[in-house]
Length: 408
Image (cartoon, rainbow, N blue to C red):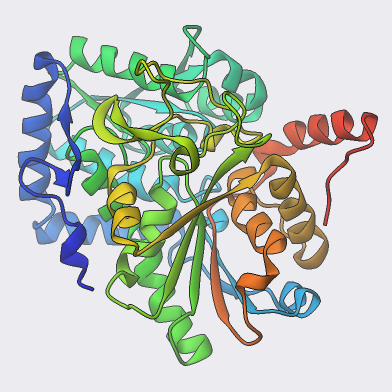
């Protein structure tokens, strides 16, 4: 299979998915952004500046770490973590924020805006904006602000204006809507730094390109460490940027299996999860055609996850095509599985993962039958868990009280 299968066409469609389903007022800025990105991405000076900052500022390449004790304790695979949690700001999000802010500067934009759920994309965008002296506004659902208070404090310390969004479920979907309204109003001097591989074209392609540094590095590193390509790649999937960043450079390697893990929440029941492929239908949300959690009348359903970064009703359109093609398998892990993944990483490896990343680890713990002795498995450790400590403690307290505490 060639990676060209999942390149978008000129209208931004990945097969039947993707596109530009936006109000007329956003067509001009999206067209400008598409043309600018196509031109600038080929500019050697842009590529050199981005590569230098990824190396000197972000701290790339991030390590590919063999989790020896976890591998030994579980006994069914040689497990490697791609350590995106060691990036500056603590997650993979800065790969994309840095690329987009550099692009915005070359487009002559003086102001950047972003949405954020778990706060890591907001922190990354605020960080890069501060470095370049740009005005920065971050939209964040009020519920997410409460459960990610540490990252709200970080963003404000970096000089960003963090705007609480109180509409609807007060989480990521509503934050994206507010950011899009801002962009329409201030499009002449503002670039919208969308944080995941979703939304209208060119964002799914652009975010994937900036995040593919993860998979390119992992490919080189595993060939050196194991002498061969991995048997399996595992990553959590919210919008899908960390997963597509790891998967994309391996798509042409047919023997490399790939599993994307969505948020199963409290179980696959309406309003209790965010597993779009398990229960969703094809629809349009916030600029793109993809799998969406919606009712029979097309109304967007409520979502839930212990992890704010996976709590979204749609998935990136390239993931939808990869699912249809059978190239990537998509499944889910529950809140309980994710907490078991946190415990295993902490106790076996001394690594506190983000709740998002822990979904991939939790799937591996729940399904040992999916792995063979000696398999080489790469898990994308997309972020660190400092931001989630309060949520973890709340979860533990609630489930200890009910006698249902999770753990490995």
